[in-house]
Image 1 (cartoon, helix red, strand yellow):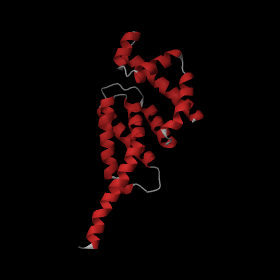
Image 2 (cartoon, rainbow, N blue to C red; image 1 turned 90 degrees about the vertical axis):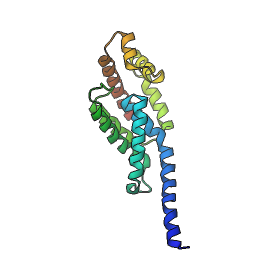
Image 3 (cartoon, rainbow, N blue to C red; image 1 turned 45 degrees about the horizontal axis):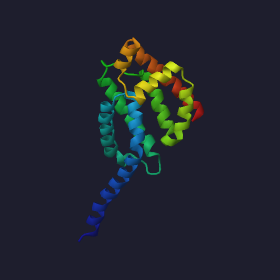
Length: 178
């Protein structure tokens, strides 16, 4: 048996194992990042699948010893931007400028989710009662924006604007407390 041929067969397996370990560790953060930017579970799943494929295709460009999650979030950022370009006719919960700011912050933080819980909890208490209610209805109860708009007797766009303002406030607060 040719030892070079056997060695060549092992390299992709080891590479695949490394990729899998990195992806499994980073995937909850990537999913949360995507969902925070698109606000739709189906779109999140689709974008996450695309990001995973791109990460695998570009894995040879990843520098071992650097932060895989940060690298993956930067790729997710571009995938979300592409998805937004394809969805221009659908109003989204955040402005393009806020999307970039959130993406920059996510890449800069690259902290485990557990490290963000306490600062986020503190920042949520600093929101107005109306903003807290909106966050609860939209994200904890997973209510569609249209349902919230109908119940609050507001337009969908008004709810999206309030979500955008709330996201910006949370981002500013997290910058100072994380």
